[in-house]
Length: 503
Ligand code: NAD
Image (tube, rainbow, N blue to C red; front, side, top):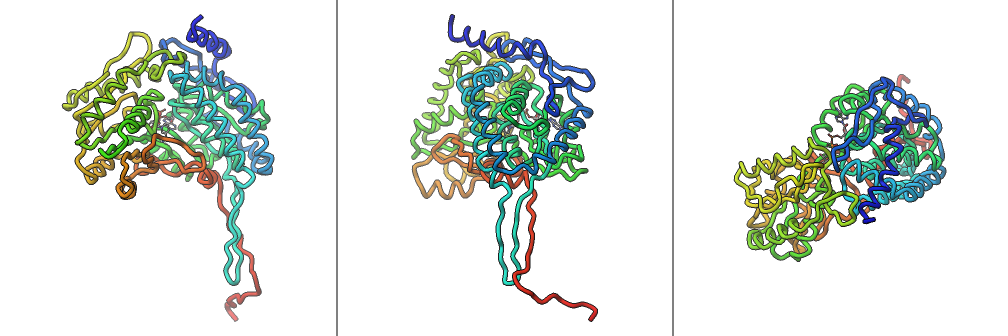
């Protein structure tokens, strides 16, 4: 049996329970169908066949989940940080123990290639481990002395929070938002993306088996405008952590306005990789192609715009085209696959629509640009050259294995192109000139900038974007700021003079 056939058979074993029972919601420690009794289907992008039915949650289910999270918060919010740390470390171990099941399920549900998903499952465990280690200090604050007063700050968990996640790397992103919330002492209602619901169910089951008390993490599946909306409007939910498209973020902000929701947004990107002619061009090409063609290009920090100095533009784009043309597109469970099928036919149609737009606007399709085969959402790794910054392919987030290359003359033009989009999530800069790196990074409007590197994450470092790419930062202590209220208590240090009125 080939490795692929063996992997498909193993994936079928993991999926069997979902095929039989459907993907249920999970509220107050129990698997439950939607209150309405309705279901929707999740398709596999591998062959467009239904994978399982999914509970179609709505307002009634959100109400029940928020009630469970509110009840659980009475205890979890007061559980000592040291105890939360122990439980969350056990969750991390349990995730690691089931990493293969998570990765195989995710590959079939999202189309992401196993070579990346096996690492994403482990990164999920790492997220839990990292935030668990900080749980004991989550309430710590500062002592701020004046001559007469001692101000002591501390943080308190804000309450039950809503976490809304997208479909691109659902397990990793869910843990990235949920782990710090739980470590801070919040309880959670999670609404995963309707295109990729499966691993969220695995996460809540794994967490409870590892000792997370019932009701601390609840799961409601359903559509954004329905279950998602109800979660953002619920008065019992104190904050919404959202990862998804910028326009959805704007809707969530409006929906949460009446209940004064705190929001944390990780949104879209159109991230430039800027290559100067003094850079190590081979490393720059490796990094740029990795950042756009890994994870199917369905990645918020993908390097979707390649800005190359005109002196080396032809050389660099020729090399990128060569790499893109050699990339293996195939079944996500094939260990050799780099690019798997895109998440859904709707998304595939969106990605392919940019090929027509590129041609209409006068760009060149240097490589790729077509669908592969009939079954499944397979799209060729694509490179557009001869593009200008005003074209749709340079301005809009395509969210597929599609790269737009634009030449620039000098630093000034590179900055103006890099910053000339509505987004500002990540930027990648390639140069061997330290002074240039310093002032270019000063001028780049992005929340995260990597110099001479692809995206290499360090969990204590802040993650987030500027402009339409987001609000707030995650990582390190920044996450705890979001999931906590900071309270200041002031004590007199001496018998200071209090103004006497009316005497
Ligand atoms: P999306 O915005 O369509 O959906 C994300 C989630 O929001 C889903 O669970 C959806 O059901 C829900 N939703 C939709 N409408 C809603 C509403 N009115 N109220 C409440 N919830 C609602 O995004 P997507 O297509 O699933 O994911 C792709 C997007 O996510 C891309 O733009 C990508 O850049 C972004 N993303 C950003 C980051 C980051 O860290 N910045 C990471 C990953 C993905």
